[in-house]
Amino acid sequence: MKKRKGEPLTGDPLLKKVKELENLTKEEKAKACGYFTVTKNGTERVSMMKFLNALVDAEGIQLDGKGKNGNGRGGRSASYRISVQSNGNLLIGSAYTKQMDLAPGDEFEISLGRKHIHLKQVTTEVAEA
Image (cartoon, rainbow, N blue to C red):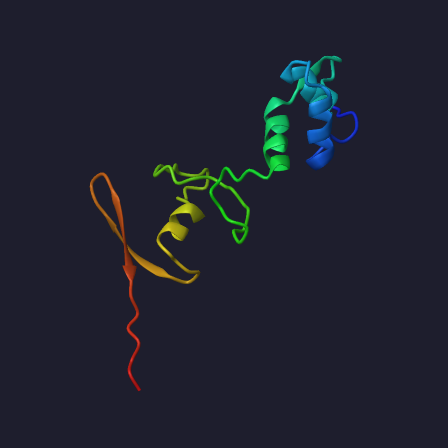
């Protein structure tokens, strides 16, 4: 079990502290800013990725290409590979449904091939009044 000592610095206080510690290594800066954990055997582990991400956020740099109007959530990208779940189901993730602009309730026709599964979207025609 890991224990954290205090909350790590973020925002302007983080930038100020890093500038004060300019002569230290990046690992020492991360540790001084609170980006480390103490393992159950008492060793300290520096969380460099959290520290560097906090620095990027504090500087206001947008790395994900999303504007301020984006929802700000990352998530997985589509890998175009899925595996059968323990209950025998295949789950198609939201990365694929978003890419295809699908909505809840959209229906598909399933056709099985020798080495593939083909999904064909069922279109419902709207009757003119």
